[in-house]
Image (spheres, rainbow, N blue to C red):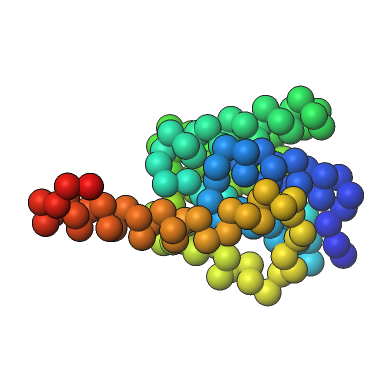
Length: 148
């Protein structure tokens, strides 16, 4: 079995929305062969809670406006560390960068086929690592008392 046209449409719209809100490392997997509850997972992350919320809100708004899709379940709002949007056909995970590294969902789904995403979403790959290196350099400079 493979992801349906509807799930691919949802994934691509959600991926573009995430990219538009500067999400990091947007990736999607076709999980239809291993899970009966959904066709595809979309993973995205952001370096802070406010941006996680912003990405989630944009995905929800775009899927509702453009495709008439509303999530049947939304979890993790208060902390904005890991928000899950369940659209039945697809499940969207937007994680704080630290949670993304810790839970490493990519490792769980690495045997599933990766779905083709819009160019803007593909361009987000590696952004989490870039941001982490930049933050580490800023923190090291602060500790050493150097001006930025």
